[in-house]
Image (cartoon, rainbow, N blue to C red; front, side, top):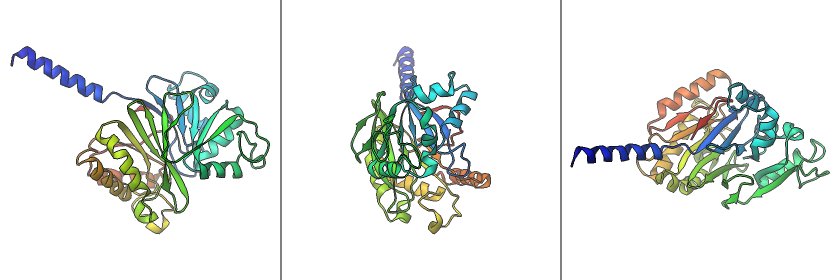
Length: 316
């Protein structure tokens, strides 16, 4: 083999690696925590790379997160423009207030768009929040006078749904969050690229459920094919939290056990350098520090652990 051929093959290999690792999604965390700090609760903007066609995965904090992102030079437009023009829709995993309060409070200033949720979650939001009593009904379904600013779109489990005003699609899957209370995982796809976002969830072993195991079966082919760019998944408590006080959440040890199940399905070594975005850490700060340390120590799969910061953009 000539030197030219060797160099050409080397160039092709490098080019392939760069192409394979090319980012597919922009992520802007508007809120990252799971409790007490109302200015920083679960909400993640996700858009196809090089676009402003964002969806918001959960909506605990909106306005304060956008302002933080603007301060960090992520956006060069006003808070109002990001809210009204950049955010194309909301995906609510479950109706607990730390996942919907930003949507509710910002609704008067928002523009017309779609709110996506499963049937049980949508019913809870309509009956308890957007009902004309607790809050004006900004939707097009449910009790009270319907202002029809938001289109409430109910997602059927496992069905692929086109996301309005974007090139993306979504599939919803059930999660157990203190069984039998339901949370949701959203598989977001754009062409051949995908991300998986999980709302609050407990481990199957504690929840007496197989929801996570069934989810891993669905996404394992995407991991094998390198189409899944990352998984957003919660770790709310350090390992010291007893199982009977998890309240439908994960610890570092429980997360790693679940990820081992995924690796068994997708193949040994398949999660090496795979991106796991850790969400919903619960303050105080000493707990958060402990969770991060315990995750790093338990990471025998070699996954890339990402700890988002509010208002700081990253790519997947």
